[in-house]
Amino acid sequence: MKITRRSRVRRVILASALFGLGFITPAAAQLHPYLIDLNSRTVTELEVADLFLEPARAMNDAGQVAGIFLTPGKDYHALITGPDGVGMRDLGTLGVSYSVAHGINNAGRVVGISTRYAADSSAWEYRGFITGPDGVGMRDVGSLGGTFSEGCDINNSGQVVGVSTIVGETQHAFITGPDGVGMRDLGTLGGVGRIPTHVNDAGQIVGSSPYETGSFITGPDGTGVRDLGTLGGDFTLASGINDAGQVAGLSYTTGGEAHAFITGPDGMGMRDLGALGGANSVGRDINDAGQVVGSFRATEGALSRAFITGPDGNAMVDLNSLVDLPGGVVLGEAVLINNSGQVVAYPQIPEPKIYVMILFGLGLIGLFARRKKAENPWMNMGRL
Image 1 (tube, rainbow, N blue to C red):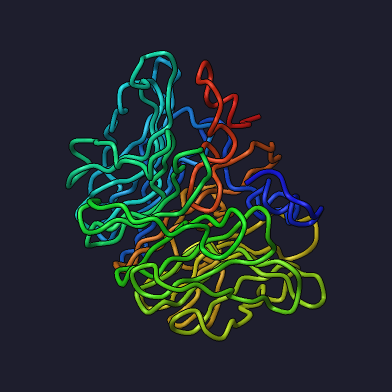
Image 2 (tube, rainbow, N blue to C red):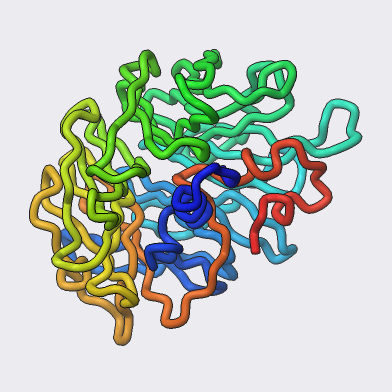
């Protein structure tokens, strides 16, 4: 997802549509995310440490968070927390040092990508994984015939979506049957390098491409595909989908601003959520009520602040006004929301440092290092 033909798309893709806009997902060491319970107005600091990549990647309705952490041995491993973000457990790997979690369902089954030894033990390979309930028992999700695969998201029936190489190492999208069984080739989803990043319980998939300026949505079970459109500008990035098929993300307006958006059911009718009167905004996740979370900037050059909307994307408010925060903490970006009134958000970074982050809910591994040897896969991945 790193090489594109257009300067604006390149800027937005390389920075997850955030660097050029001033929305920097916290990726600095020891900057911890918070799990916020909107019902009780409580804030819990997640027990993760020494982070150089966005640690909180996905959350289920019990408040279990899946993501990534840096081990004492300086390897990156996938993680899962207990309910309400309490505790943290290392999910391990498929046999070699590295793993990243990208998605989790309500049973606590986690999907992502890990390294393993090739059959002849001559090199490492990147393979998608799925776990059993509560993150127990990581296994290889398989491939479409090539040496690479990556699990990007999972729904509550256990359907996994992701990308895999076929024989000849061309990259295709895939969807599995329930419990991650039976991988089906979705081809290129009608575009160049289209990547499925999120899936709902009907099997509708949204995603984007590094080579195109738009995002797409499929019908149920990954069938059919169409573009989501834009807010009048030249770029759209889908970042979440709910069970009604409402999509949230970021799109450019005719005036060249980046604004958060929500669609109607089945991805129809993109609506501008505005920016609370500010310069820009970005939507990062959506729940089944249509509540969108993300961040906005009050003025050009200002630090971002986290937002949340009401149902169906209505009544955007500053998330900081709804919770009792520890002294001195200002929430800069909300990245996850579930159906139980819980949000994962990061504090503002006073002096942001740029790191290449995990992109749109899937790793950069699959597109930066897919064909690399694995002496240092995270260096190959492009992490600064």
